[in-house]
Amino acid sequence: MRIPVEEALRYLGAAGAGGETRRMAEEMSGLLEEKIAPRFLWRVFRAEREDGGIRLAEGGVLLTGELAERMLRESGEVILMACTLGAEFERMLAQWEKRDMARAAVLDACGSALVEAGCDAAEEEIRERFYGKYLTNRFSPGYGDLPLALQPEILRALDAERKMGVHANESRLLFPSKSVTAVIGLAGTPQGAKIRGCLYCVLKDSCEFRKTGKHC
Image 1 (cartoon, rainbow, N blue to C red):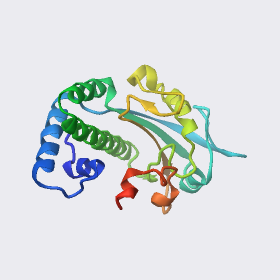
Image 2: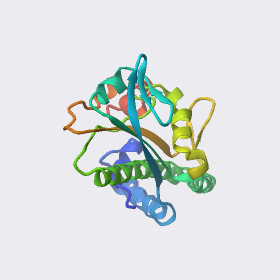
Image 3: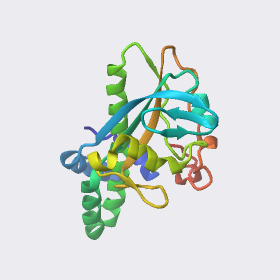
């Protein structure tokens, strides 16, 4: 899977950069593409409305908050997905941190771009599988008011630790670090509700992108 170099530069905080920075991003993205491909899995659940949120019937996950209610209002089914670069990326990054910290930083940014590309590939597979239905924007725990505390529950519903080696630590952060979970709604009509940007993200006050006038 190809890594979008522009996305890697954006994660690095160097969007649009040229010269040595771009050359290094192209070098490290090429190395990463040779060694690691994202792995993903997803599962469909019936959505049941109840007091306090939207229950995913077969998985026991309760999606709480205004964001889930708004995004999934017309969805009779909800998809949970997870994507990871796995522990192999952690080993690769550790090796480069011992050799060259500048390249390690670029590799980390390339990893972020690659796992998002994996999420895009998962979403494309879902679109093909459910041709004729409409997908909402995908959104993840930690965005808006969807709590990070849902991470372990989503992983359990997907059996992601056994199948892909992904788990959540006590702070509800995922490991391996280049791992993502997300929620997508399935509906019978085009979906008007969209993800609405930085002001709805729980990381808005600490985000490194926003500090430099950029966004993810």
